[in-house]
Image (cartoon, rainbow, N blue to C red; front, top):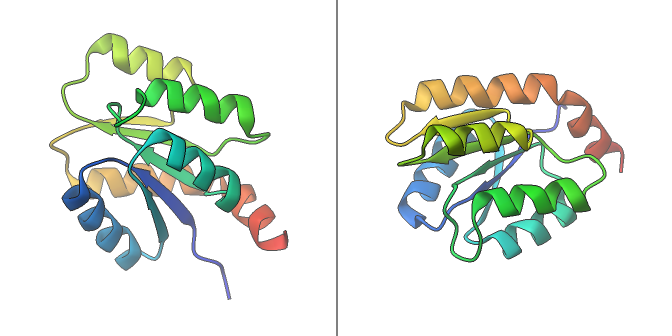
Length: 134
C-alpha cells in the first residue's frame, strides 16, 4: 500500500486549517496542523512532512523566519507553499529566495492550491519514500 503524503499546515486561522485539512484528506493526503512557528518546527522535525503549507503571518514569527529555521535545522527541508493574504511583490520574492515552491494568495481557488500541492508532492516523492523506510 502506498503511504499517504504528509502535509503540515501552519496557520492560526482554525476555520481555514480545518477546511484545508478536510479537503486535503479527501484528496488522499494525511495532514497535521500547527498554529505557530515554534510548534510547526517541532512537528516538522518529528514528523518529516512531505510538504508544508504556511501563512506568512504567524502568531510568533513571520513565515519567512520559520522557513529560514527549517532550512537551517533540517538536513532536507520539505517543499513550502505560502498561503497568505495581503502579500506584496517583495514578500513573494523573499519567499522564492528562501526556496518556496509556490506562493498562493487568499482568497484562493482550492483547485489551484491542490494543483500546486500535487506538483510539489510529485517533485518530492523521495521524501515520502525516505519517511516510510525510517
